[in-house]
Amino acid sequence: MEAEEQVPDVVEPFTLGPTWKRGPDGKFVLPEYTLGWQCLAWTKMYLQHYVGKAWQYTPEQARLTLWWYAMDPETNRFLYRDGVIQRLKGHGKDPLKATWSGFEFVGPCRFSEVADEGNEWGVPAGQPLGMQHPAAWVQIAAVSQDQTRNTMTLFPSIFTKRAIEEYRIDLGKEIIYADKGRARIEAVTSSPRALEGGRPTFTSMGETHHWLESNSGHEMAAVIERNATKSADGQSRTLADTNAFEPGEDSVAERTRDAYEAAEAGRAVDTGLFYDTLEAPPEAKLTEAWIEPTLRAVRGDSTWLDIDRLRASILDVRNPPSRSRRFWYNQIVAAEDAWIARYEWDACQREGLALDEGDEIVIFLDCSKSDDATGLAACRLSDGLVTTVGIWQKPHNWNEKVPWSVPREDVDGKVAFVFETYRVVAFFADPGSGEDEDGELYWDAFLDEWHRTYGKRLLIKAVAAGPKQHSIRWDMRNVRHQEEFTEAVKRTRRDILERALIHDGGRAMRTHVINARRRTNRWGITIGKEHRESARKIDLAVCMIGARMLRRTALNHSKYRPKGRGKGRVVVLR
Image: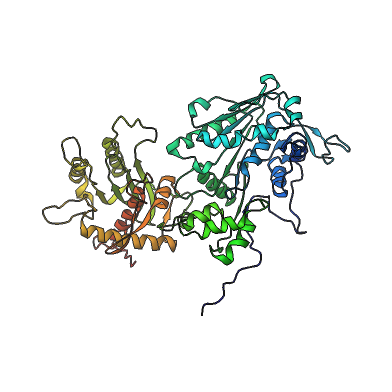
């Protein structure tokens, strides 16, 4: 008989950011000095839920407002230069950000003076009072018009008649003006060049888990950051909202979370990033007993979310568990068939490590012609450090009418550089299956040239004997090689989980490793893409595993002598 599942009466969520932090007295911690009190007062006076009902934040939203507008009492500048709000789907992020956009548009959103007793706004004495920005320019940014529309359609209903008349607001569908054009709100989508050079005073970035390299999201985020940085008063800010992102997509949301965690851990400088999230704890399960208390914790004060409806979606077997965890538990989780979770890979990172000139290394090249990436990875023999040497793939904005192929001469140049800089003990390359215009394998000529040029230097030969003898060509379509690689996949995964592998934190390799999926063959578990046509590359993961395989082979080779260690021999038992 199975033991009854133990579920706490109250599930404690995982949080980042200040909004849900409590002090020793059990009360929520609030900022000491904030323009947020003025924002709360102004929005109640000039915004509405609907005609006749003044705007009222939930307690959670009010605390978010106070923290987002927190200021330094010495300088009267905002504490945070940019921010992220991560919540579950349906939490109400768009309406919240719309009210802040309205405040930035025509409200008293910049410091004016310190409040005294009995001020007209009811702001506590000693807190900052604001004034209207003289040339407010608010941008509602997203990578599609549908996403900007979610926010833009809110403005006609949330501005009261008093606000429209007093600030002379002209409500348009894509641009809203006020004060005879001196202030504006506009919707902008993924056209980075069109955005370049603007000087917005506030930018709302919508659903950044959808901002990818493939839809110009990375470039758009970079332009928005540059525009905010050069603002005249230095007080322009950007605020993003996101659901839990999918690891491995390398979205702007994922990059921002990584940056925040790096700063929190002391691995990077704190640049004033406000990050606030409310997530289910790791132990929360997708079972009947866990769902209701977990959802009550994760939804915060968004009581309009119907728990019975969400429970039905979570228990629907047509919805993958990873999707339910991301959408409804607000958890950042890998797909069910992921080879390695992001946090497992990240735990193996070592700051400040890099290859040094003269290091003994092995390198592995995974060749492609056009569809997949071509990657080159190295592994240092002394400590097992793995790092990316090169990655070549079709640019995301490439004109599809023009054929693209990996520039072999660039790869050849990188290989030459590696041999000139380091002591290469082994070099394997999978030739892939692409052909050139003459019907020859795309990489054949280069593999043969490398064999003739570098073969004699290499301790380990890819094919040591027989008619197909070759020092470098290691075709992964070969049955024996598939078996060897499958064994290397198993050993590498074990090394990652046991923290016996180290890497330098390279973003491209990290993305490819997280993209890798478990695939079964006759010898066990290997790796593959999520599906054949997937744009999520794994080539550097293949190279990394191949390089680890070569390191182990080299260290156990009878003729290997570690550099600078006489005639001793290193034996790797794993």
